[in-house]
Image (cartoon, rainbow, N blue to C red; front, side, top):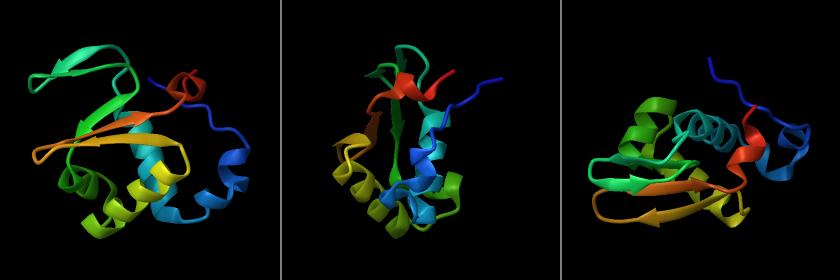
Length: 101
């Protein structure tokens, strides 16, 4: 069983007050690769997620627009980095190791 470590700043931080952002971020933490691997022919390193907006939407029960807005806000806050192509998005979680026990 995997565990996440969430600091107090996660609930006190300004950008975590929007439920969609928090829900998406926690989902990304659980979806992230724990070690380097190859997914659909794409090299993924620890702390990255290969996904699409539709996949994230289905997993979090958020609309695609909510997912897109939450990703943009998390990127702007410096919590994640995004690399997008026409087929997929790679989400890199900044300081991934600080969230893992």
